[in-house]
Each structure stands twice: as C-alpha cells, then as structure tokens.
Length: 335
Image 1 (spheres, rainbow, N blue to C red):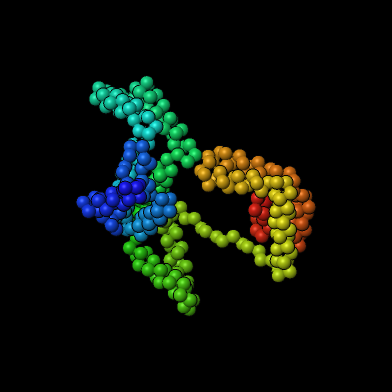
Image 2 (tube, rainbow, N blue to C red):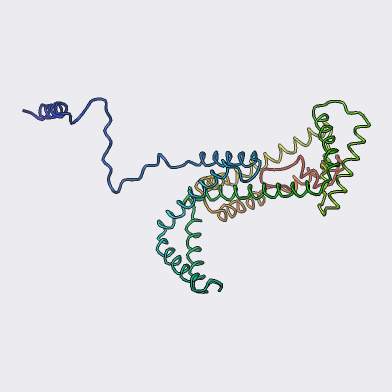
C-alpha cells in the first residue's frame, strides 16, 4: 500500500469511527504561549461611541442620580478598576502595592488621628510615579487610557450638572412667586419670536420690564448677571472679498511651495505617523515647532505682510482685525 492509499485509508477510518465529521469546524488546540484573542477587546470607536452615549444620558437626565446613568458610571468605574489592577500586575507593581496597602491598614488602626507616616507616603508616591511613567509611554495601555479619559469626562459633566441644579434651586428660592408668573410671560414671548410670530409693542415693553425686574432680584441675591454681546463682524464689499480670497490663495500657495522646495513634506508625514502611533505630546509639540520655524525661515513673510496691510487700509480696519478674520494660513497668523 503506497503513501496516498494509506492516507486515504486513515481518512476513511477516522470518519467511520466518528473521529471526524464533515461540515463541523474543529477548534484549534490552545497552547500556553499563544496570543490571547482580541475579539472581545473594546475598539477606540466603540469607546468613543460609549462616551457620546454617556454624555447624552447625563445631559438629558433630570438629575445626577438618574438610575441608568448611575449604573453606566458604576460599570465604567469597575472596568477602570479591573484595567488598573491588570496594569499594576503587568508592570510588576502589584506586590509593592499590596505591601503598602497592608502597611496603610496597620497605620490607620494604630494612629487613626495622626497624619500619614512620611516613609509610607514616600513609598506610595514612588509607586504612583512609576505607574504614571509606564502609563505615559506611547502606545502603552491604550484601553486603560481611553477609559480613564472617559471617566474624567463623565465626572466633569456630572459636576457641571450638579452645579447647574444647585444654582437653579438657589435662584428658585430667591425669585418671588409673582415674578415666576411673569417669567412665564417672558417664555411665551420668546417662543413667539422664535416661531417668527408678530409681537405687539405692549407685550415687548412688558417683557423688558420683567427682564429688568429679574436682573434686580438676582443682584439682590448676590448672583452676578453677565450680559452676552455678539462681536461686531465687518462684512467686506464683493470686490474686496475677491481680493481677500486672492491673498488667501497666494498665502496657501506660498506655504505649499516652501513645504515642497524645502523638503518639509517628509517631516510632516513623519509627524502625522507619530501622532497616529500615539507619540508623547512633548515630542509632537517639538516637531510642530521645528516645522513651523523652518517654514517661516524660508517663507517670504514681508511680502505677505505688505499684501495684508494693503487690504487693511482698503477696509479701514486695524491690521490684526483682518488677520483674525478672513486672512489666515494653515500654519499660523502673520502679524
């Protein structure tokens, strides 16, 4: 019996005794050194979606004690605790942490009213410094970093909501019942205006009177009233707009020319790759500053300044106003 016949014989034998069944997938053997499955690991997009959902739940909730929001936050805290424990273990800091915890529990029993022992405090600080150093490494513990960021964001939103509710309750206590009724008039008038419905002169006068009365009440309650005014925006005539657009185009083209001629495009691509890999913010800022310096060193800034200045004269505006408005460049303003 040759090799092919022997292999065919073995195949048929395995099928006849039930060792192999057609159409049923066979799980591979799991070995100790195999890479763990990443199927259940959360992706960055999933975490971002979860952040947005939490934001909506917190902002839509009537109060910070909303059941669904509380449950979601508790789940997030548990996930962060679990990730932190895994991070401490992988960094080799778990034993040190447990040792310090034991010392802390003993110290709290012996001297409950005394401040923390200096040596013990130094140990805790040292462990946390080592942990933060390892955590700050580019590309390390991305899942934990994202969850910590999400938890901080949620905490800030809850704090903001609590302050809002507290201020609302305080205002409701200070505002008299008569004025609350008048405020309904103010709300109805605002709804009419937003719908584009006509509002008579008498109603507008009454609304202004209610506004003034409300301001006085809030001032008497030591609550500062801050007026919000819109910044005046000067609209240039069509012919000047064309000139502004032309100058903008020239600025962009000049920057593009400098980038190509000075060979900076390669470093820009390297910077983009570094950002994608999760390089430290310090390295990214240094690279950005270096690229900007090289561009400005090669760029004919004086010529561009003259063009901006001539436009400011035509618009009869300060130079910085135009620079902050229409005329700008991708790599910064020219002043």
